Image (tube, rainbow, N blue to C red; front, side):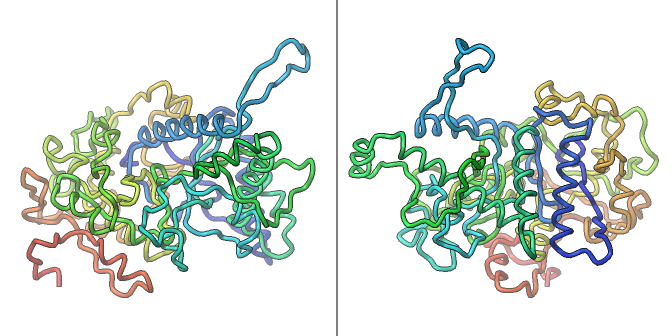
Length: 503
């Protein structure tokens, strides 16, 4: 909401399985409900660009226009690569054979998050062995790249099903196959494992086709030169059914530009304030990353028109629950507090600042990322600011790509979510009673805040000088990854004196 996304839709926010239902039945019902929504809901059109994420594992970091533009650019570049690698084919109009079109053999249609390990235990199966090598540099972690047994130094190359973006018409066949495979499972229906198998089968089939239609001589020459772009299928056990569809246009976000999975990646992540040039210039050295490319705040963020701290144009119909309260609604000065001054999750190996972070089911990791997100110190004030703002007319492309026509039909639908049966849930409906874990500010229930005598006062650089502001997170015991998480905790710079109150 703070990042001004169109209202999301919660699919089965509280799934109630039938009495005595197995875990498999519950998983199957989840995918069935998703498909029903995609196929029948009148708010969703077949060419709308959809974002599907795991609700409990997802933290949003950047505005929606950054997400969309990156998706389009990654898709464009990938399709150029697919055309170069696999070539083209001719499509004939069945009603008029004189009408023919030359199109690429394969195109990328759905973009998934990537991860460093394969969720299948069959390491010589197509699911694990046949996926392409990562396009990231082969020495991105130094000489141990892809060789450390725990997978932390692997380049991401396997699919993560918890975040995907694509058009409705392209996502439906993917989830139909997932549902079909789920029903075949004897005991459990593991969605992640099924996606892993599907992506492996797709890449295996592509490589077999490439070898059938390609030039052996050219492959030999390119292999001798070390530039052969091929996928390993030697000794791979693949269960490919003749006549069965394996091509779904699935691709991965290898760099973490849209989606960053924290699974085995915590050691690669820093929260960076890009205004702090000393810290930024040293962080690549700390991570052992060659500095051919300087680490800078990406231009699509630096030049983004959305500054969350700008004063908003007030709505003509303000709710009494969000009436201005000076002691609560104060924000840092927008003219001297921009994206450069905010702590942003950065994947140091690729210099990517992801739009969305997927915390891979780790409750402690999710809590850490939530409490340290750039918006958290001002979350209540920013949300109240958003709800007081006048509705914005979305650009035409956003209307068509996000399926957000309901924004024009229901301009008052702000500060809430849709359900899959088209009911509107306000912020109060969703979150009443959860203010403490969300805001961690001791200001009381939403809409009935206690005026704070400790008004926050910021200097020109957005640093809290007095009153109630940023919370410092004490991680405590968080399991085996505690040391990695603790290393990039926010709040105290290495060269600053610790505040005794933080103890």
